[in-house]
Length: 385
Image (cartoon, rainbow, N blue to C red; front, side):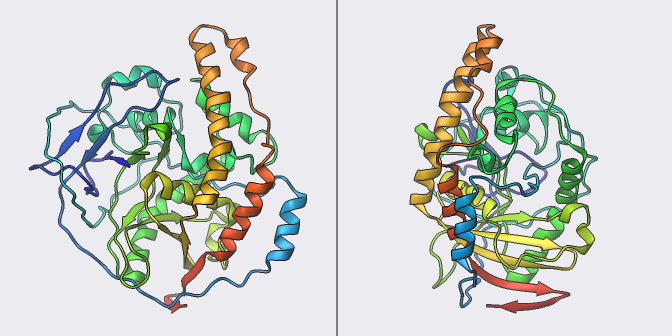
């Protein structure tokens, strides 16, 4: 796993490179049709380890009825909350590189609370052009550079779409977004949901910290350490250190702020984990090589925390579908487009679902039902399970 620091204003998790101040490492960018470039950057911060060890119980979910429903429906029509963050266009800065010493290291620091910039949605310039001037350490979150890094990856927040979980044209639209450089069209409802998530993400993280007593280490963009999976990327909301007597190794924090179909002020925290987030969190664990995720649902009226464990058999199923989407649909279309053959590129557009979409949904439902509800907070009252 390679972490990419994308904001110098916020403290970042340091996993490998430590030598004085800010360090970075980069390699030459490759064409869009090849494996993703390996890039990484890390910063030094103070070390803190926190514990959060509770007795856990499985959610009580009537799986039989759910599985029968999922089997009869190859995909779902539920409104998809956008996982993308707002794009705040920021200027890039001058880039400096130097070789550093390699040694294991890990830190936890407090995130910086700052005002959120107005939401600006637009398609960034060609990633092939930006790649020549990208420095992960100088690519601020939600900037053109950060967006360009994501452009040439299949990110975990889009996994459920690439798997075909949603009815309609969502999967072909994702393909079009990855192949063409056109402006991204975002419907008003999705835009408002994105704004709500961005505005409340820091508040939610602070609430999670106050409930659990844990530190959350924030950082930028991560790509898979294995060259074979270099086309996959992730941007989780935080890193968590290991737990004592419960879960070994570090975890991941993923925050969701439900928009509640335009009425977020009336939203209540989930009582069970939504299955359509399973591809995202399992993908994050694979990219980051971590064994668990705390999925935190925050609303103005309360919050809940779910512990999701890594399932490698689920990843194997999911990876087969995602690999086909990327290497048999996206990459050939990009290559045709580079040769000026737009009509040929359009022949690679994928279908709305995959032949294994139904199976992926059923397995997602099962894993979601097995995720553990750690605690529920309503009006300041916290109940642990």
